[in-house]
Amino acid sequence: MTLNEIRSRYLAFFKERGHAAIPSSSLLPENDPTTLFTGSGMQPLLPYLLGKDHPEGTRLVDSQKCFRAMDIEEVGDNRHTTFFEMLGNWSLGDYFKTEQLPWVFDFLTDPERGVGLDPSRLYVTAFLGDEKNDIPRDTESAALWRALFAKAGIEAKEAAMGSEADGGERGMKEGERIFYYDASKNWWSRSGTPERMPAGEPGGPDSEMFYDFGVPHDEKFGRHCHPNCDCGRFIEIGNSVFMQYVKREDGTFDLLPKKNVDFGGGLERIAAASQNDADIFATDVFEALKNAIAERTGKAYEDPAYQTSFRIVLDHLRAALFLIGDNVRPSKKDAGYMLRHIIRRAVFHLDRLGLEKKALAELVHILVERYEGSYPELRERRAAIVETLEAEEADFRKTLRNGLKQFEELARLTRGISGYDAFVLSSTYGFPLELMQELAAERGMTIDLDGYAAEMKKHQELSRAGGEQKFRGGLADTAEKTVRLHTAHHLLLKALQLVLGPEVHQRGSNITQERLRIDFAHNAKLTDGEKREIERIVNEKIAEDLPVIRSEMTRDEAERLGAEHEFGQKYPERVSVYSVGPAEATEQSPRYESAYSIEFCGGPHVAHTGELAAGGKRFKIQKEEAVAQGIRRIKAVLE
Image (cartoon, rainbow, N blue to C red; front, side, top):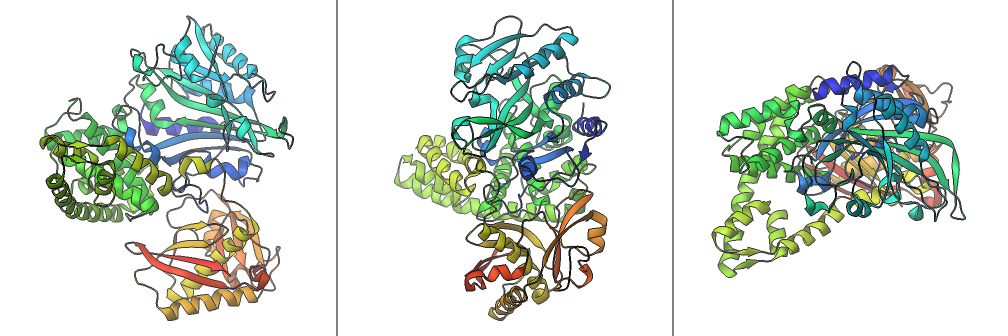
């Protein structure tokens, strides 16, 4: 089945079961300083999983765009990608295990309404239990799976694998299909395993689904194979998280009064399973692009000498397409740095395949045609995407020449390149490690790859804003200081439009307790006079102590009212809107037509702008700078 068919069937399947379909969020999380990218389906929905009411109700379904920078070095094998789509369905205090697991099983195995996978190829896992924290084994999920397999004519025996390492030692026994693993594999909370969870933190067991591709076991991944083995025989295609516990102050666990379900299924992996081919890049979405590269280069995807380069180009070009489509632009830091990195890596591997000069811009049209039915914004922004790719490819070729000069200088001075020097060549000059290795081999030189990996790891920990580790801490905090700066952010955006013109729109934001940051579309550096006028307007609105009012309405109604919203962001049919002022407004009659500002926003905010002046504080712009072509950034504080 094609990706589009599976996505469409999935959304229809759960809409028939009372779920509201919600659009994919941007790859750039809004007001979340803990991570650069949206890396999972549940990430944009965490506020609702933690108790906030969702405007679309208690049953939701979506296909969420995701980008995981930490997987970039793995791209080149048959299953790792940086960009992917995560199918998700959610119960916010509604249904639980007895509905969720049969629905997922039916969708995966039903050939008429679902994917039609052979149930004999499916294996599942459940939570082993945690005696130390008195959390029982998830026998309920195991019993449901056993009954579902039995209905399909399959006897499903249970096995307690313990940790993943234990599984590798024990292996699988005949007839075993339901495997118990400990909290390191089958428990979810934002903080990790139960002992790491703070008081008041919710969490719960999860149940994963694996597809058996039947490839021979590779013993370098352990003596024996089992579902969580990384040898490639089994690939996880879905995971149901059952958020049912909360940690007490005394360290023990209690049941949550309102339990949630969070399912995530890898769209590309399910498509690969539907074809019984473990190669993600054999799915339909890559077919036309793969053929185009082969026709233009004379190289075959199946040739082991070129397959890694093919896969890196296929993945990185798709990821770049969606990142640029969500208004990321190449730059020297944060999300822009990662975009620049994958574009340059793609250019290098296209060169290895023998396709040079403007190749990315020519090839991206093929991917747009594959995805524009589900993501029409890609068609609308095609010109900007092509322009960005062309400009970055040209810049990289200039940088590559400079990097080559630096490499030749190192080669003149030493027979071995240190890990630090290799990292500088890569990060500062954009010189790919693969090219360094080729040139070093030609000259009989060595490269300290372990040292390079250590330097890269340090850099990734910093450049991802803490990435996955920090994301476990949850949402951007809702401390009083952060909430005040969030409201100041709204005042600032309107002031920018009043001073610079109505064409100014937000392109990103990041708000912490210390400062706010806004990225906005503007082509010129702000003058000192413009900055002073912006500060004056914001402080004036703070002094007026205007009410900040939240309302819910349809998306169309909010757009008719002129509510500001982030360019490129998709919104559900019903949205949350915050208006600031006028002074006589009430919650029942917000008088949007005379409000100072009105924006699509999920909150939270202060009740009145005067709260921003607590302690005699005033709004002040700390820094204004360019971060990408046509994009400026302001950092500001209340001090």
